[in-house]
Length: 66
Image 1 (cartoon, rainbow, N blue to C red):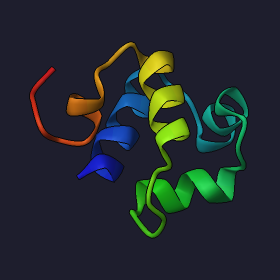
Image 2: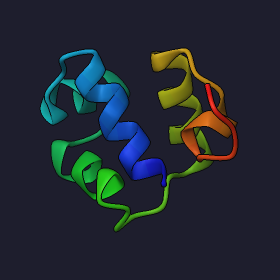
Image 3: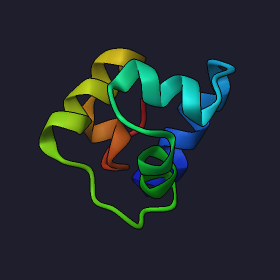
């Protein structure tokens, strides 16, 4: 669920995977794996993403609506 939400947030901001990856301090390949849910998000990355997009962890993880 978080992969779809992460991709939607990224596209809403008009960012490429490479641009967002740079902002989050990771690689484009790693971000792609997050969006495809091939790699689980670490707690640290959840925090970075939530701060960047100003959303709650519950929203990012699909627990609640924004």
